[in-house]
Image (cartoon, rainbow, N blue to C red; front, top):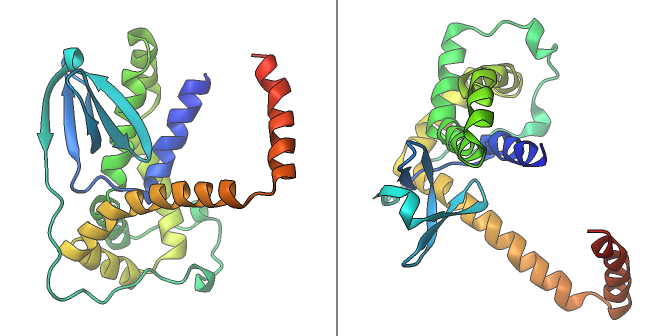
Length: 221
């Protein structure tokens, strides 16, 4: 159950991630996984899927298709995300119908921002980690497209049609695709740099206290 919950968190986290410029690994089992390959060896391949590193072994891989990240264009497209603080206070999302035109724009944004692809990749990764009978049950219970539809009122609440059209134009451009492909790497690097900084500057008494708290927990495992 903990494993299922972990991967469901990754699935939802894909709302803020993307897989543009990623590689797709096709497993012999028929499952595919899309992400950025970060390490290869004679026996395995490690791929970054939504910020989680997953290893596949050569004997289970059918083939790998690599897609290079798009190059940036000379002139950047002027477009910035809306300021969330200025979003109007809306009625509960479920109570406000979304027009077809705005629904279509939301779906376009979900695609160009990489949300749909990342959620599907994370879902397939979750399925491949489970026993076949468990995966079969979950496939009948969960549908990524249904989850995306549930997100529509959330996008509707914070973004206007003009906002969405601007984002679609930008993230559909070469500059936007490069930004989306780079964000997960920057986030991962930022976490690593911050962790090293805090470890280097943390007073010794704090380190000792943390070590003492961790010792009993390790003893119970």
